[in-house]
Image (cartoon, rainbow, N blue to C red; front, side, top):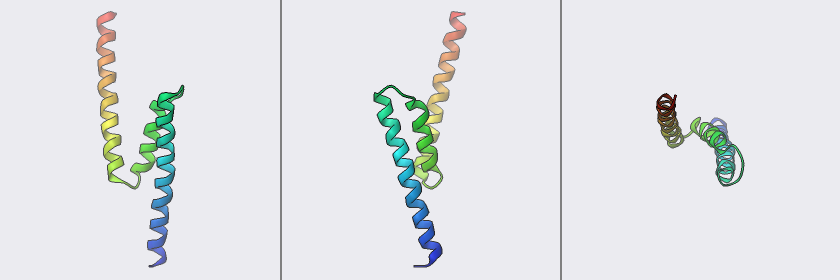
Length: 80
């Protein structure tokens, strides 16, 4: 195993551990008072730097937030 490969594997492991930790904290905040809606995308963003599955989840999350935002704008227009 070359030092470059070992470094890449170690970096991937560290990013995975940090990203999963932030994501789990966000999941806990979802059920307790806290900014889960902010923390979960941060965890996915960290994971998305190394993992394609996290990038896809982050994209889906952004699409859902955009659709909720559009729905809220439409409701606001109807009320005011």
